[in-house]
Image 1 (cartoon, rainbow, N blue to C red):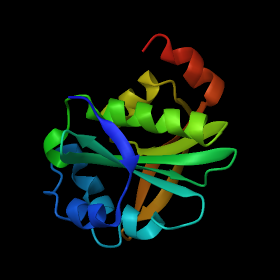
Image 2: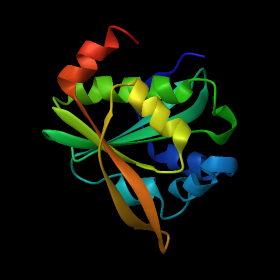
Image 3: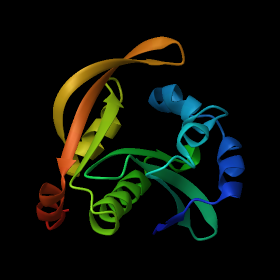
Image 4: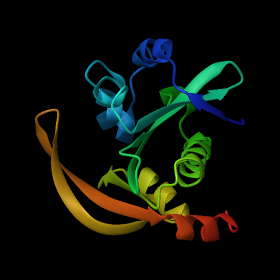
Length: 162
């Protein structure tokens, strides 16, 4: 399945909020798709770019580049029924290419829950390195995260082997 990245449209938010619930290790991320989640929090903010990922006519994921200047934060989500087939990697690669190419970002940071091993494995494959740990409140609970970072030059060098 090949993805096409495009700017997220206003009607996409309502569609995403109708996606089925995440299950298993991803269940903890379901809040990001719902009212008060990532799109309600960040869409429309200055220096935030929101992208939809389409496979054919279906919206199968979305991603955010937050604080696009020299350094940005990456967030991405894949449709719950499309997990485990490589779409997360395609979406991340597309977002990184946009950040480093179109937006001139020098470094991308992100946080990943410490119990979300599939996501950490993906980010490491893409060249991200752990730079620390942090605990942050999410939906009223303290959650442990790994902080990870990827510099533009590392991404461009590492892309040749991906």
